[in-house]
Image (cartoon, rainbow, N blue to C red; front, top):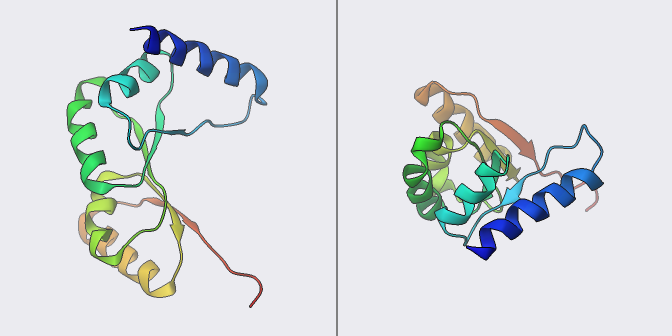
Amino acid sequence: MAEFGSIASRLQELRQELPPSTRLLAVSKGQPAALIRAAVAAGQRSFGESRLQEAVAKQAELEDLGPLDWHFIGRLQANKARGVVRHFGTIHSLDSLELARRLARIAAEEGCSPRVFLQVKLLS
C-alpha cells in the first residue's frame, strides 16, 4: 500500500510544479488497474495506454470510477483502429493520410469523434 501513497504524493508534487493550465497525462501502460485506481483517488483522470487489449481490460476493471480520459499513445496499427476508436477519446501519433481516412470512416460508423494528434514530418 505504500505505492499508493507515493502516487498521491508524486501527483501532488507534479501539480505544484506545473503551470495551472497544464493537463497531466499519466502513462499507465504496463501498470495494474489498482495503481490507476490510486491515481484516480488522488485526482488524476487522464491516462495513456499503447496496448489495446491491456487497456480494454483495465477500462472494464475500472468502469465503476465513471468516465476516465483514455489516450492511445504510440504507433497505431491499422488492424487495431476500430478497437482504438471504440475505447479511446484521444489518439496520439496518427502518422499517415491512409490511417486518418480509416479512422474517420470508423469514427463515423461508430458514431464518435475522437480527438486526434497528427504526426507530421516537416523535413525529408
